[in-house]
Amino acid sequence: MGVLSKEYGYVVLTGVASMLMIGHLAVKVGKARQKYNVPYPKMYSDDPEHGHIFNCIQRAHQNTLEFYPSFLFCLAVGGLHYPRLVSGLGAVWIVSREVYAHGYSTGDPKKRMRGAFGNIAFLGMMLTTLSYGRHLLGWTGPPRPRMFGGASCH
View (cartoon, rainbow, N blue to C red):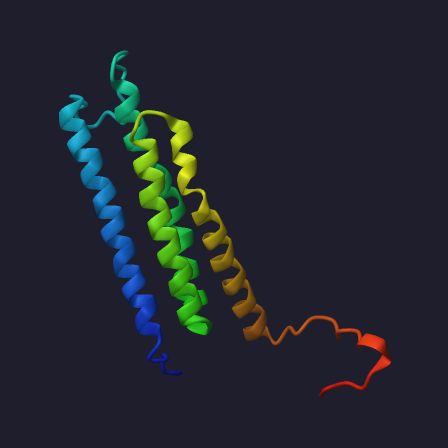
């Protein structure tokens, strides 16, 4: 069995930071439930005056939870091969989810797009994970053409 690199500690700390972010969004939903009088187990408010604000706060949390398993998979697996890169991309994604939730919680769903930059970070995490899978299988891809007919650098 292999040993994890010391740098995998960054991956672990990024995972902990993501749990704190998820918890923070959950607290926001709990406070909004009290403020807008939305009792459990109701998922959404049907209050015509302020219900949309609660619904936006709740959706920001729910949408983040929908992405969370994929985020954790890419963080844990991609982080085995690229711990610093994946941790940095993960940190960007975490910040973007806070920005997303803050914009969404205004009650104007269009403001959630301020956190869209996290999609680029998430794509990077997916690509690093894919790259690690290719590495494990020994897939190197097709040989690269030599520029100007020069000698190979192998």
